Amino acid sequence: MQAAPLFRERLLFWCGIENLHQNRNGGKPEMTIVYLVRHAKSVGNTERIFQGRTNLGLSAEGQAQLPQLAERFRHIPLEAIYSSPLLRAMQTAEAVNHYHRLPIETEEGLCEIYAGEWERKLFADLPILYPEHWRLWCEDESHFCAPGGESIVQVHSRISHAIDRIAAQNDGKTIAVVSHGCALRCYLCHALGLPLERIGEIPLSQNTAVSRVVYDGGTIQVDYYDDLSHLDPTGKQEVSV
Image 1: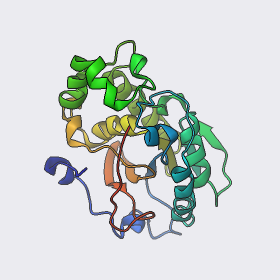
Image 2: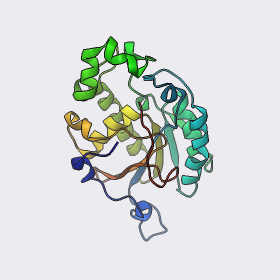
Image 3: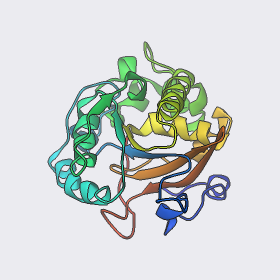
């Protein structure tokens, strides 16, 4: 899945940017740097079900992705790590933390969308069982809400407030946040200053993909999004919620 042109224009090319926000006084960051990580491939991703809050762990393929992710963060001076409490995210956060040995803080606001009746249903069955809701999911996601579930509007508000608060609590630090595909797309709308109606311009991040945002003086800058160079130099991988 490729980023839409309007989204792509607002991103900086990621290569070589890791040292962009270091000052000349001992290399300490001048602003708050947040690394966003989507969880590694889970059992639900492999089975092609809508996981939402269904608490499944990582698949064998997801477990195999963790050493590369750990190595990516080996030399990044993380000072705090936050994670959704769902198992697939916590297992991924442990890999991010492998060389740092920090306490992993769980944050409910980082959870995936709660999908109500859609939880644990096969993606292939959803357009048959819920044709109108499926149309919204595919064509007008900003107005989507599964029967009995959480709306995209609610997810957007929840995760935006959570990450803004986490960044404020860690002013001037470098931190990692591990979350989920739909939730991170909602947050990126907020970080880019896009109305939620334009969420379709933001591609679903891939498993273990890393994005970097910077909080500086009341502004948020997206340095790069959905980078998979630790797994595959081509950065190509099948994606699913």
